[in-house]
Structure formats: C-alpha cells, structure tokens
Image (cartoon, rainbow, N blue to C red; front, side):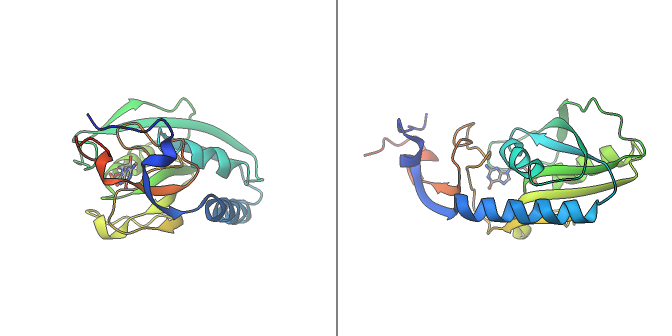
Length: 190
Ligand code: 5GP
C-alpha cells in the first residue's frame, strides 16, 4: 500500500493550477454558459465522483434556471488507465427528452467514458446536449471528442485535486496538482 501523510498537502509534488486560477476560470465558464443559454432552462448533469467539486462551484456561477442530476460511470481497468468499457452504476432520475442538457465532467483523457455517456444521453432525445470539462488532456485521446467548454488543457500526466482522485485520495485539495512519487508505489516515504 502507498503511504499517505496526515496532511494531504504534504503528499503534493507540484501545484499545476491554483485555487485562484480555478475560481476565475469557473466564473468565466459560468458567465459564458449563462449567456449561451439565456432565456432557456438547463439540466446540468455531473459525473460522479470526480466532477462534484467543479459542478458545485460552476452552478453557482450560472444564472439561468437549472435542474441538477448526477450519473456514476465506472470504466473497467486499473486506476490510472481507462479501458473503454463503461458501466453505468447510478443513473439520472430526470427525464431529459426535449430538455437542454449540460454534462459536467472532471477530465477528458481517452474520451471513451464521455463518448459512451454522450451516446447514452443522445438516445434519450434531449433538445441539445453539450459537454463541459474542467480539464482536457487532448494528447491522450483515443476517440474524437472536443468539449463544448473546457476549463484548462493539461499535458499527459496524472493529476489530482479539486474532485480528482488517486486511489480515492486527494479529492479535497482545493487546487490541481501532481502527487509526490512515493504515492504511486509501495515505497516507504522518507
Ligand atoms: P477517459 O474515458 O476520457 O479516458 O477517462 C475519463 C476518466 O478517467 C475521468 O473522468 C477520470 O475519472 C479518469 N482520469 C483520466 N485522467 C485522469 C487524471 O489525470 N487524473 C485523475 N484523477 N483521473 C483521471
């Protein structure tokens, strides 16, 4: 088992995106969405668990009327690689036929999870379906998928924080970061 410090910040090697940068960008995205959907109502669906923090901040920057819902999707495979086989573990409760739907994701990596979810929602005949992601990792893409809204573009490295986990840890970091090397393996930390 990897070893974790008593204070989660001590297991971080590098902060990539600060709390302040996230706050500013989330406000910009909320303002853009409010403008794009002016006069309409939105169903905002977030993907559990990673997108929960982003979603909670984002919807408070949106001024058009919204309903919220969530979906949990698990992809088979190990913790840092997506396999492409997606299983829905918790479905939405809101009927979305004829509704404007915004799907909120934490990060798009291979794009396999999101393309599955997009097809799943399209079959329910929404009036429109758009995707917003906090982070985009375009170099890792295996299927063509461009988010309608993107917070930040990142390189091909595994990031944690602001909802994103490694082995279910680090979701409570208020920033996006890279953990120290010992987090990935079984070695004792000094
Ligand atoms: P995709 O299907 O696009 O490859 O994977 C999307 C999911 O993989 C994300 O929702 C997230 O759960 C996980 N993921 C992909 N890259 C990262 C990363 O850098 N950090 C974390 N914490 N999760 C990631």
